[in-house]
Image 1 (cartoon, helix red, strand yellow):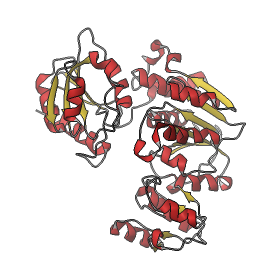
Image 2: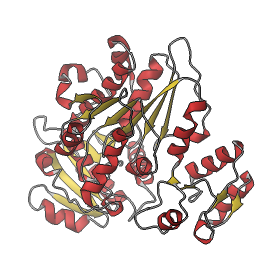
Image 3: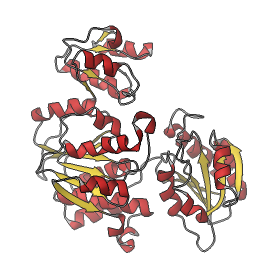
Image 4: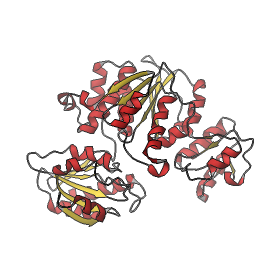
Amino acid sequence: MLGLARSGLATVEALIASGAGVTAWDDREEARDDAMALGADIGNPLDIDLIGFAGVVVSPGVPLNRHPIAAHARAAHVPVIGDIELFAEAEGDLPPHKVVGITGTNGKSTVTALVTHMLESAGLPTLMGGNIGLPILSREPLIPNENGVGVYVLELSSYQIDLSHSLACDVAVLTNLSPDHLDRYDGFAGYAASKARLFGLQHRDQVAIVATDDDPSRMIAGRINHRLHRVSAKDIDPADQARWPALQGPHNAQNAVCAIAVCRVLGLDDEQIERGLATYKSLPHRMELVGEAHGARWFNDSKATNAASAAPALAAFPPAPDQRLHWIAGGQAKGDGLSACRPWFGHVKRAYLIGEAMDAFAAEIGDAIPVERSGDLAAAVGQAAALVAPGDVVLLSPACASFDQFKDYEQRGDMFRELVRALEHE
């Protein structure tokens, strides 16, 4: 096992519980100590003759296109896999169940959480895992009940799909596709091929659901030759969407239509689906209303780590009738600039730029929006608080990774939430 963060340690524990011998490694000494306490041997797989090992399990964070473990394992004819593949290999020993796999550049966390909520609301045994929530191998198996068999709902990053070889999802979903993670792939085509593999792993009687609102997703849908449902954000009636408080904006129309399609395939009726949509609460860091201060509503969209993800958030706040949106953006840019956001610049009253991307974003915005070069998040929140008017909206939707100033997007969103709460008590 290479990489001993949360899912890595859960994998070590599950393998040892199943009777496997495990050799584990992480560069962090405390993580190695944790694995040793679980009963693992400690050793760097790059220093070990891997012949005879059943496999090398790697954390999704290990970049296989650059890390020497890939070539080392290949030379020993040992497969490199992830924890999702171990789950797939163990499926035959689980009680009767269904597996839903959800991938895409943006929206996959929301769709995963929404499907889980809708199934739970309908009384089905449901477990959410993969790239969200608790590691899948740390959970107890689902037991069927009077409402039906259990459903495992998995959010799947491209890295997790890369490390899977026998994961055949009963329902597989692609939300959308735009350039991301290009440091891990041979261009956008390599990234898109990774996402498309989820459908290639399915059997002919299983169901593919693809939101065909973008050209790359339409191309993938055109190559699927088993049961396919094409869906679109345009399928959602705005009057219906108005009844779902946590699912506003065009991006959430797409999220909702994907989740509805999954739940229909799994047998939910219209009443169960509507109840689930109406009672869903948004995820932290994804269009999360964190407070009201200085007469404005403040939204934490820290999970928007690229421009394609930030654009729908900007679209969700049109002038009413005047511009009301104060936009906090910036961080560690991913190289795609702000072109995906440009159609919605007219919604923005003022932009507050932070982090490494501050000057580049200011230059790209030009005269289209009034800009404050805030530098950091605390300064941006302070400046916005001084400039908002009653009825305005302040949106942290950075269109950037967080690693220049934060550990991850969650820490960035948590700090934003704390800063807003401090404003509420002024």
